[in-house]
Image 1 (cartoon, protein in one colour):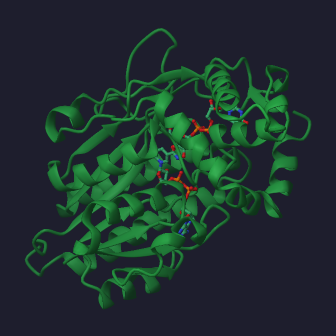
Image 2: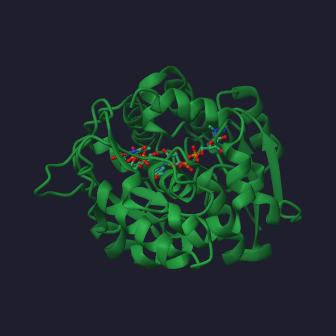
Length: 360
Ligand code: NAD
Ligand code: DAU
């Protein structure tokens, strides 16, 4: 039975990936989830699978080399899927240091631990061991409004401390592949949305605020473009790259689903009104009057757009969920998980929100 070590599995994409993998492989795999449980990590996301015999949670910081090495010594790990990271651009602009620690040094620790466990004295690796580094399209920088796409060959040009830290971690993975023939892949994905996404990110923040009749903060002119992908399509892409992709290769994951932020907000408002019953008092609150243009994000990248040609041609992956379907699934999930949203937005979140949006 194959054993997966998933880092950051209590976060948004990691928890969706763990759900996806158990749905797909059932008892045929074992998953060890290593997560520090920062503000973004939430074991509630995994409540329905936590009792499985083939699932183990270990609370650990990926920067803690000793602890990570020990996990590899005590378990015969076949696959590493490395999600753990600080992931929010606005936080990175305020406090870059933790981004460098976790995203760069933490990735180095993961690489060293996997290499120590898998490399044999002659420099080859134990058979069928693989490391997948989950990264972002933001490493490629920003595109012009009127054209162009990110390809795997696009030069790196990160702008925010977050994307610079992810670019650095990608470079480390590339260096380990080139120097030690370390068996890895890198995936660079566009903006995800879906269940369990923390409401610091645009889509869950807008859904949550709109349902409470709170202002909907739009940075700058609202015309920045992101390429949105439903999170379960990303989870599937990661698994397909790890099983069908060529080792040492990078694969871009995205869906040709480019939208301006202001378009996203209008779609959310329309869909909320459609899905809320006429008797629901929240329906009255959901209006365009809530849209509030605020000061722009510093260094705000204008447009991201992935060309997913390589992953489609080599691996057979393509995005299966249309945005219209994905946003309905997401809103339905939030309707059915009001407690989840209440829990994650109580306490520290209020403080975060006030500080981040004060004066905006
Ligand atoms: P998230 O912030 O929701 O989750 C991050 C998880 O990592 C949390 O569970 C957190 O507790 C854990 N973590 C943070 N620091 C840690 C540490 N030092 N040690 C152990 N665990 C730690 O992030 P996400 O949106 O799920 O993103 C996951 C990965 O995917 C990240 O590497 C991110 O760069 C990448 N990515 C995200 C998107 C997106 O749209 N969200 C798109 C492309 C790539
Ligand atoms: O492209 C992949 C990246 O997508 C991931 O690597 C990051 O981890 C993830 O956070 C995401 O980064 P973005 O900065 O694109 O996502 P965010 O949801 O923070 O913002 C999306 C867009 O919406 C961006 O142009 C900024 C804008 N925005 C965001 C917030 C939170 C607003 O206009 N208002 C807001 O309140």
